[in-house]
Image (cartoon, rainbow over all chains, first blue to last red; front, top):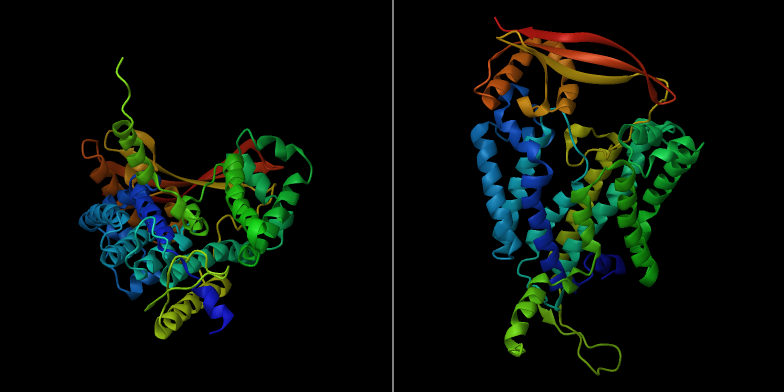
Length: 286
Length: 163
């Protein structure tokens, strides 16, 4: 077996994929209620304004109405929360994927397509293939490895290929023009407003953004400290973008957690320890 | 899939965690799926459009801006049965402004489609008076060096009236 084939399925602890799965499914639930509540408003929009995307025409998915949108909303909410517990990972996982894809078709078939969640959809598509995975399990698994690796590839592709889209739709003007100036003027925060007054600064920033995006694949090549530096850089990039122009890519940040050793994050275990402690070390009565 | 315990390389003082390996078929099917997905994404990026979601091009903030060209600002103006004129918000209809901009050519070709927004408004505000008229108003805001000059021109690009 070639090294490349091994790389695609490099084993990771099952506990890592268990934690990532919980995070992704909890995000889906939060997305419905908190992050994109406007999707549900399409329940009241007449079907004549539904312009199905290619995927909606091929499958073919029904025209959304009040019933379809409401049923999808509640079913997805219930299934996502259930899937976050790790129970019935295949059945619930595939259900979440199918329902979330339908939810995205409902969201984006009215004239506006968002581009912030390709990698999250990939994560939802590959997670059900892992099967059973318990939190904290140190057993390493190639199934889990493939699921996380594929998500990571989608994360890096989002950066790398968005540079191509910039050149395709914006042309070289994207680099040398007023792209960032416009963004800062439209939605700049106090952390960014000053930057429009410094000549050429934002053009330099535009070059840096493209340089960053084109070098993200290095995260797969670098080892040790440098690898973690690159992962940190990806998160830092979004912290800076958010601080400057309050644009966040939350679904993308969730998918990016596929790079993190999440098996060490055990909030439930910690909480249990915290609750048990008083029983084991009784506080002496005054 | 079979379980295989891999002995650690450092002389075997402590056995490492066991490794669950994939079978031959399972491995190659997975790799093929990844490569197929990557190929679709690549084609979508090169020649695809938003319609090809989720494999379309990642064109978030991909357009370039010029600092001295006017900005288009599209909004909906409504009149209800009491004669009140007001701006229709995204929440009032459930149809977002970006969606209005995306379907604007369609509205221009078929103004009667705006009537559906009146229906959506009535569904979301059942206690409010019905709408009798909706206009799509495009405002061109003049910029100089990226800042609004205070001047703008405005025109109604498409209208609908209830019969």
